Amino acid sequence: DKMINWIKSNIEGDRIIWIIAIVLSVISLLSVYSATGSLAYQKMGGNTEYYLIKHFILILLSFIAMWFSHRIDYKYYSKIALIGLYASIPLLIITYKFGLNINEASRWINIPIINQAFQPSDLAKLSLIIYLSSFLAKRQNELDDIKTLIIPFLWIGFICLFIALTNLSTALILGATSMLLMFISRVQIKHLSILIVFILFCGILALITGQRGKTALTRAENFINKKDIPFQLEQAYIAVSTGGLFGKGPGNSNQKNFLPQSYSDFIYAIIIEEYGFLMGISIIVLYLVLLLRGLKIFIKSERPFGGLLSAGLSFALVIQAMINMCVVVGLLPVTGVTLPLISMGRTSQLFTGITLGIILSVSRKNKVEESYV
Image (cartoon, rainbow, N blue to C red):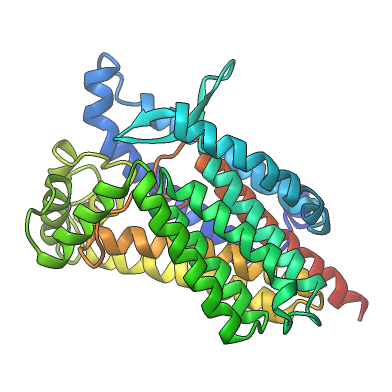
């Protein structure tokens, strides 16, 4: 009884979002353990549990981050969003110039002392969505005037540009999320088209000057012409096509031994190989339910800031998940985005926890406000 009472008083907000986060984390632990087994065996002198334990600790930390951020009144996030944005720009430039180079892209800065790789684009993404939600909520009566929109347009363009220098796919997801936020805030279509042109301009600038220009163009060209299928995609296709309806069973993947990034960008392929097509579909359904819950919070929210915040963060998470899964099954060209809540990540996992925590904070406040009505 004590345990149940503690859960009721300490774990608040939308219960279904909590359940989805737990279910996806369990799937994540099982599939990461399987995908990293042979890698850990080679690199860690036979200790096959090494990455599993490391990943479990990260998941635990992300749930702690989720819990803390869901206990904070979401209104406080708007106060720190601008600080996050101002901090992001120098961090993104430092990453571009001096970041850790992993797979031909400098997306990480190593944090000394704790020796963890940190991805500044995560901070920029979260800060921009919070800032936009706050701005659009405060200025909802002035959004017909293009002059009102100049500053948020510049923020979106610059942040997307600096992220795109090293990570084009994340910049595109953020650009799309920003557009959706503007759209549901009833910004006029003619003004949105100016934003689209500006984002595309920043994207082209990033392609010309950034690290990923050639890679992105080659991947897009190969995808359109269906030639030169990259090795990792070929392995992912084999994994997906041999999984069948129910899969080969936990730990029985053959492709995990050949597929690069099988525990991060391509983990969805290993899941389908081991647990089958039905599990693949179930994961898509879980993400869609997560989006629906986030949008339900948006609809129910009395306060525009909370509603937009919940919608924006839900869009960002689920668009990323859908893009990752589309890449694995060959519906989109290869991108470097992970599968939120499932891929083995570094600090990105903590940011996913914080993101869900903020959505839960909005839903918690909605419930409190409803009970007063």
